[in-house]
Image (cartoon, rainbow, N blue to C red; front, side):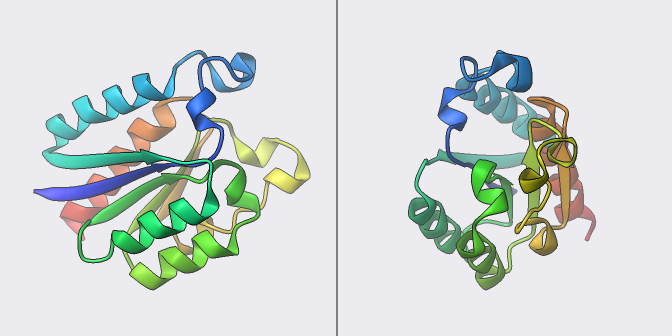
Length: 146
């Protein structure tokens, strides 16, 4: 059975109350529960982790080496700023799918650049909480069909 690490970046712990017109009313706990249910259906196991700290996310990525078959990541604001997350993903060489609740390509100019996309298998954005579910499906398909 494939193992997937799900990483949630900064401020995602505030989902449900943070700008609901942009991010919806679904909480992070709701998303994690939906991912758990889908993981069972897809015959994969997941471990979820959220941090507001870039260093903690880097450490979790490094710990994925040899332990996980794939990474599903919403780097949130670090998408646009973190060379450290990009380098960590490169160093572990674990297939990664980047997801975003909002469509980063239709937002402010500074949010349209992703440091993570270039080291990911793919990117899904703009489908609210469903971006995570679509990302898990895509990553699982990639892992089992590659």
